[in-house]
Length: 244
Length: 124
Image (cartoon, rainbow over all chains, first blue to last red; front, side, top):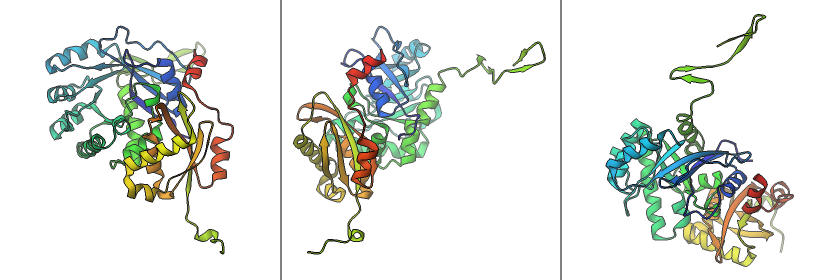
């Protein structure tokens, strides 16, 4: 029914989430996702995802919540080799700016500062150069009603304009904290169409872009060291030597 | 009165959906929630263009009828439903069909009611 290969990279877990990782994974699989990233807050003790459910891939992530832009780079370096996805929760202009200027960051979420979208042409250019993805938080459209949803929609529309112009990588997420906040990929595509995102763009934000974010942090199969990779092995001769 | 010939009838789409919820949801509450969500998201004009109608709804499965060029809006309306009378719910569209029979046969018949709690135990 649903094409495979959909990912939601911003599933939050940790103390504020009441549901277990197993439940989140089970529901994501039921809704047609092939992988989700479990984001723990940066003060969480154990960042590794130990659960191995069937039929769905789980990625580990850390959600950096800091108000201090100068400390951000240190925190990013601390976690870079420990998790698959590094997410920065924005919220003020300096943190947003620092996050998109650091190529080691994968994802910037919660960009909006008060009523403003928190994203502009300068940040868009930096995000595009450093390949830092921004998230279109469709959870806002689900959670809010009335005036705040109107603001959320117009911010999303404005961000989409910048993303198109500067070719910024982006992902779609419903930013779920519990099972019931999760939405199926096709529902997210429908929600994204409300602010003018085309079907093709929405699909790439759910499949190909998350895939590239993950693969750049995970060494490919047959990786030996920087620049050398085993493409395939072939049996030749009677001795059965492996030729690499 | 003479019956309207089939060629003159307006076309429709039928969305089969399931509700994943903490507790069972009543049909009347579900109807109220769908129309309130549509009114809030699309407004009165949009809702009338969408021509939403809840047909069957029992055992957490149901069928919503809508206008054929507004299926995306209908999906978005269903996605914005968070709770029905205080019960947290998740609305998942299983598929779209051009007839009620098709939607029932293809997507609803034989489908199980999904509960996240039970599923996670199976995985363990």
